Amino acid sequence: MKIIPKFIAKNSLLIFGILALFVVSYFLFLCSHPTDYAHIDVNYKKKIGNQYELNLEKGNLINRLSPAHPFSDTLRNLNDSLFVLYFHPSNDSIELKALVRILVNDKNSTTIKFDSIIGYVYRGNFDSEEIAKIINNFDSLDYAEQFYKNIVRQIIMDSAERIQVFYDNKLVLEKFMK
Figure (cartoon, rainbow, N blue to C red):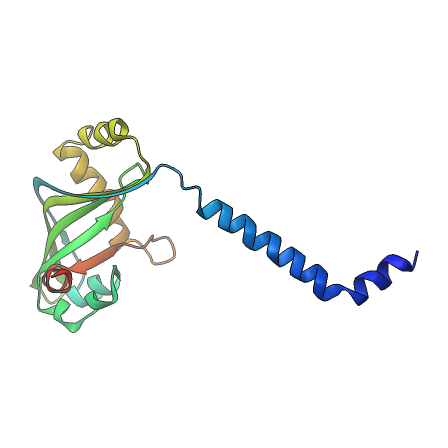
């Protein structure tokens, strides 16, 4: 009975090496056999035109958002008004890009003008028919409803219940992407 524990104690480095080799080989195998996964970033334009007045100071509103990229977390946000907000409609494989203006009404009031959908990103198994079906099922009312549910409502919620809403300063994003 004591033979097995002695063998393990004497050869623990060898056993660890064999296990590590197995794990590395397994992950190399997985990486060399890709699935039909797609990441499609599409420019798309659909005018919406809704606006929402919030009882929040602009700085407080922006603090409730999360920068999608580090370069968008800038003091320019207090002066600039054009932003791209990202949200997922009911389907998590689609991320919509909304062009919005965040405007100061007075010290404690800000308006979000939902100008348009300017694009979407699809992440998932590549099925062009499914992608087209998902996008074509949205009309202006659906976009507005999804924007309210996934952006406006999240901004005005208490922080414990809120999900993250990501943004980019449009002007900074354009400079960075050049």
